[in-house]
Image (cartoon, rainbow, N blue to C red; front, top):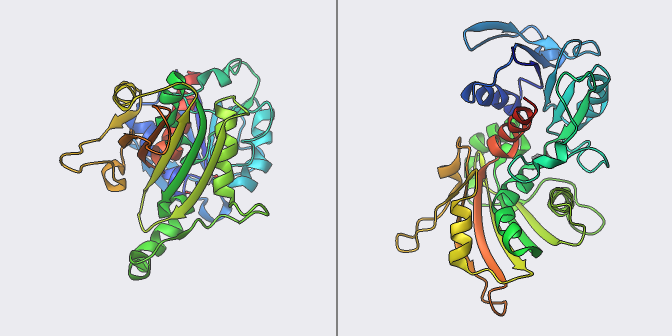
Length: 324
Ligand code: 11C
């Protein structure tokens, strides 16, 4: 008999994806509780041949819940995350509320599962585990296998982010306003900070350092929203401490879990957001030596990953699987 699971924010884009991913992966839950705001409470849902009623999220929602998957925004996580932990629940939180807090693991299962050590299911002790930002997850899925071989000293990231990262309403807006979006792109909608970077860019900088447990890695990013529905694309320039040639890099990435290489120069076939939409794997291509760096100390790669899946729901469910 598996754990009892609750989904917080089940009516949102990521909440819905939690349900698909749990089902696709045959996650062995004993019971399932679907939680949302008062507005959505009472909605009927048929899932895996059983009828559920969406319940209002309250302070008593977590009695007897082993694992709670949260994706209802930072303020809901801040309020209800600690309440759930007090009840002995292990919370996997998709918001940015706790990511940079000391003592809270920020986890990509293929990258740093060891950060969760000591967190045990049914130990009576609750815990919070943070799911990184989607751009960070997609970038580090490809950069980490190379980092393990040749140690990245500096990383420059440029993103081309899908509407899905701004929620279901933004996806609807993209559909309705396709003419305006289709001929344009714009700087990411996250607030711009006093240093000129926006919050999304600084997430890539700070989360990478925490996930790699390396305060000295230099990271800079420019994040752009493009008229794409689900999947993000990222151009990543890497500088290494030791040489790494492109053939070795390609081989390392071919063997990396959760990564697929699409790098056909003759056919000009490389990763695209459409090709990775609704897929679990992150696709990498355009793998080439950076000609601006002497020797084999630099590589350029292009990465695409489904923001709702590996960028959010799948990564959170994989974290929950590590607890089983
Ligand atoms: C985007 N990365 O694509 C955002 C969405 O910190 O979890 C998720 C925001 C976050 O705009």
